Length: 390
Image (cartoon, rainbow, N blue to C red; front, side, top):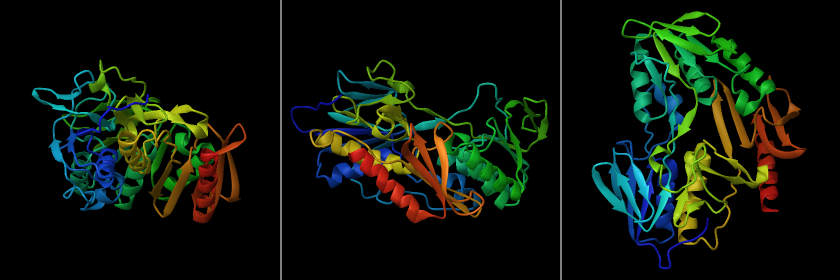
């Protein structure tokens, strides 16, 4: 999937004005690219940090705008999503608006919150992916609502913890046996469940939402075991779907994201970065992965810029993924690949306090999680980096 134009690009388009696309644009300028640079984004806002949306921003005003957006030398086309990619004529389509020509491009259109078709369009039902989503949810909290959060992954657990911190009644519904099952596995998921319960969250695990009712506004949430939960607000935190529909017919390979090679290119002169990218990772022996974490978006955006300007020197993106989350007074940090799909071993401490856990696949270290043992986690990250480079 390598390749580029014979002459240096004079017009680069970045489709997606989130952290990955913005970081790619910054790196292009830092590397000396002085041609036209166009940012195309579906939201009206300039790039902002997403991690605070499920935490600090729900509590009160927070400046989430990423630094440097005002000084980046670029043309901003915001508030209108791309509707197609014409590789033959090298242009980005934007519905009835004029197409944007390009020599090379970065696809960084991210993901959107999943909303089941069976959920009715009642007031009081929210998803949380964008800044506007977070502001709309926060506006409803002053009325002290009773809240049901559907989905016990990262976003659902963070929202539940934040709202309990505000003293709201919160029920967290998850289809897996423990919260953060996919990210941490059963044993550490039990630690998260215990922490939620200690802070007053009503956990309904192994359950799914099958119905919502109310007279114009949500009043009741029904679970698959017949339970009816009273609710003034329902927050859907049921995962995310890659924004790839606009690429149908483009010739790019679409498979749970935009598939690219180790070089970050999905086609000659077209790089992919951030939550929408799916690429072979050496820690998993070339298995295709898609990583929805802020640190990966930043790293991959940086690499995408380098791959476009100098593909001969940048043939493999192999950053070690990482994430962190605050749940009440506990800061959970991770590197590499973790979760229920891999073998877990607690190597120091216990989940009730400070600990370090390793995740292995076929006996090989591929990830680690800690609460409190940051230096040990850094050593694991160093080991994983050496594995990648060897």
